[in-house]
Length: 236
Image (cartoon, rainbow, N blue to C red):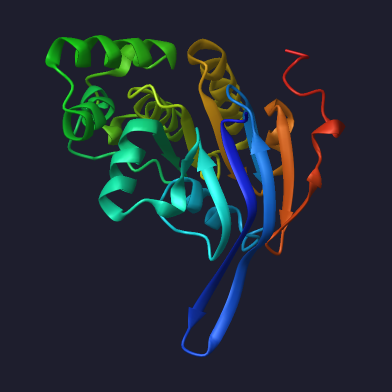
């Protein structure tokens, strides 16, 4: 059974008398340990899809499951607990806390969400910082490092709780092309190292060559699996 199952997911937002359809009958399965991307223009439904997977939103119709858990059935507190236990998040604006060091930013989910004991926290934080190549910068604050380095820290923070799935909405949007390539390569390396499943969205077709599976999305509909055009990650 696939780790993530989306079965005829539709999402409609109603504002007053205006209905806008964000997702239309999306069905997709995602296997554990894969790097999957949804590619489409702004407003195509990518973010809504990730919000449903991230338990931030519920589908209007259809079912979404991660590791057998029906996401739409979770109450607010259950959804928060599920996020903390199973999911990691990477944001395009990095979302690092300015007053905390690199180390403290990565430690934050373990401290606040997981209540992990101090010795284990230290071990986990140092391990992921080393994995993403940011150990030497652990005492710096976000304003002392580059955009690419900030996103490396964000990847480390997403991985530190050892989540089954990392969701990344446009993780390279604020990065130049070379840096974007390096971040996606890093995700692939982390997938190999930790067995994590990565699901990310992008409107930049240049960075998808590192993904295992690429789904086109437009106007709320999947336009097909376009990964046959790439060699996937096997050329590296």
